[in-house]
Length: 154
Image 1 (cartoon, rainbow, N blue to C red):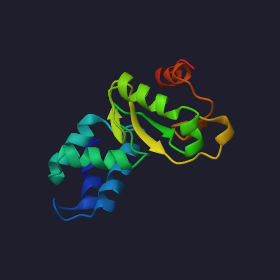
Image 2: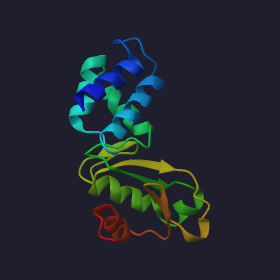
Image 3: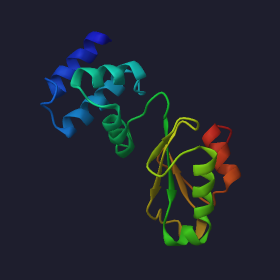
Image 4: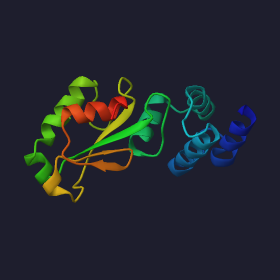
């Protein structure tokens, strides 16, 4: 797999310092596919070392590209921040997630294994609050149901 990774790095980015962000994201997506759908830590370390990329830049990219998944953050949690969901107590869900999983908005929760974001209206206003877990919208969410979803016990 190391040879294939090296070929991907060379194909997408060539030499360190001579690539665009879109090339870097394409490299990460292809490396994820090479790893079977989850970016292994050693792969991320190798890419960063070879391209002279700081880990903070990698974390920033990972936050904003929802389909990139690591061993520590295999899922994506989005809580609706629309007006109707706010009136149905989505703020309480946000506070619970942030406290229970030691995460901030646009952050990564290693404890929960997810990236955390607020999103716009999910168009299910009468059924709020809504959350989206790995692209699937769940309505009438409570902290108990959300905990089951996060822990895989639903």
